[in-house]
Image (cartoon, rainbow, N blue to C red):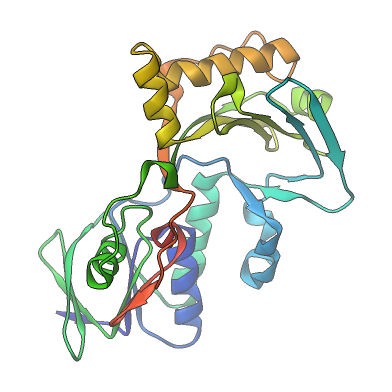
Length: 299
């Protein structure tokens, strides 16, 4: 048994940030993740401006910042567009492969112990401690466990059970997102998306709740669609041949028609990756006996 003050289950942005601040305060922290870093994550890769509150991120922009979005174009369901811009960024563009890895490095540099490539199997809360079992057969002892394992987090499920809350996400409270990133070159990006690095969105694309997006990094486009799971379920009930991957490919065709995507670049189904994103039913309370959840684990 290895002892720590805190075990953080999940080393994504929320978990790595929690580990960073705890380690910085002198706590012994185990940062555990089933993946090995760096690793890819399905995401649009946009950081809201409240990220500016985190000094260790702002002080290290050069490590991962791709671009600053200062202009947005949003197409409504009727095809009409609203074009807006401002001097300060609407959000910051990063790529998760690099960004997430850097946050883990910052946590380790602050003193956290990274245990990567090892999944948490289970954990047990006693009056005096938390015992966390890992898939490799080892056990960690801590005062607290922080769940940062995303929308189907172990710690979140335990809090739901203890509080008598629904154990499963309602279809309307979780979205399915599909995306891909593709290199288009700086010349294309500067010509089409400009120095303001326009962010593009099409609300209710093809009449479905949700939206499609095209976010401009430095030389890469991040393109995706996101819809509530309830919307996807109804689309498949209405049309047995409807497919979310084809839906994203249809969106790419629309971007090409409107001049927002290179016509000569082919996007295949194999390039697409997906994830589940909570959009409702936030976990209340978000803490229990020696337990806490952060990030998507909390809804």
